[in-house]
Amino acid sequence: MSQSISLEQSSTPPASTSSLLFIGNGRDFLRLAFKGAVLQLISAGFYRFWFTTNIRRSLWSDTQIDGDSLEYTGRGKELLIGFLFALAILAPFFIIYFVVTLEAERFKAFASVPLYLALYLFGQFATFRARRYRLTRTVWRGVRFWMTGSGWSYAFRSFGWMLLVVATLGLAYPWREAALERYKIGNTYFGDLQGEFKAGGWSLFKASLLVWAAGVLLFGLPLAYLTARLVILGLETPNDPAPLAIYVDTHHALLIAAGIAPFAIVLAWPIYQAIEWRWWLNGIRFGRISFISRFPMSKILMLYLKYLGWMVPFVAAMFGLVVAIFRTNGPIARGSFPSVGSLVSAALVYLAALLVLGAIHRYYLQFRLWSAIVQTLVVNNLDAAASVTARGEAANALGEGLADGLDVAGF
Image (cartoon, rainbow, N blue to C red; front, side, top):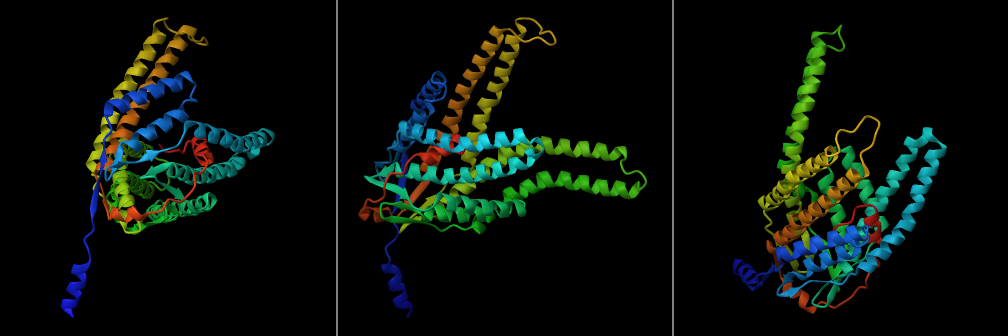
């Protein structure tokens, strides 16, 4: 019996592995980023549709799988048309909200609730449809990716899970991500090869447990300390409901939390992103094809720190320059306005700063991040894609336009 088992195991062929290669050049990408930023400024932002398309073409074509590059076939004109259609859909919601709040000011708070709910649902719908658009414009070896499924079904699933996340103070978030990814990947195809998502919420929760624990300690301890002090002071001074010490302790606790928060976010967010990236990539299947991500947490943390290392002094210098511009004309009298020349100069400095910061952001958190993810990814059993039959049709860009209009679009 043991011999037959060993024979069966030995007859199973080992999984073949293929590495991905990224051949992009950082200087070329920076030139592309700065050129696109300048053209956006000149065109009052309308060039962003072609700029986004050029960025995607650059990243896709520089990514090689088994020696063959990905191809992005989307066009800027498609994104522009999708955005205009999206505006036609979203405009009535904002007009209705404006009219309702104008006519009934006292119901303004209640009127905003259905608006925010509608925008959330539209945002999730747009996220799903934008993903469908990008997939149908992604081609490898002449075969396109494509998607089935309903954008509205995804939106309501996301809304239901978000209610659960809020009710559990964020603990249900890993299971939400797993459920939504099962829906998205399960409706994703490469030709006639259907995708499947195998990773679960529990695995993401365990992998990110230290990040969650650190967040609880950093933010929970000051609040727990404050609560304990309030209880003790309440017991010690029952006849004085608001002793001065309570305000002092509240002030100290808030200062501690406010001082820790920026550093905690800078460290925790990139680490959690790396964990989630690896979890997501390792869970994707297309038939026998699977992925192994060895993306290191230290890499994404260094990219964020480098980006901040450029951004913080640059923003400080920008504000210093703007202050210097206004001071060149002397102090501004109370009730008066700065000169037109000062305002124009300050606006130009602000726009120039946005161009530079946008290019730096795209370089570190798009180009360099994409490169790091690709080059630490391994594909198992890629030979299963050799017999794939091309299927699927190109989706329209409405979802991408909605995502752009609601500011939820990815790159």
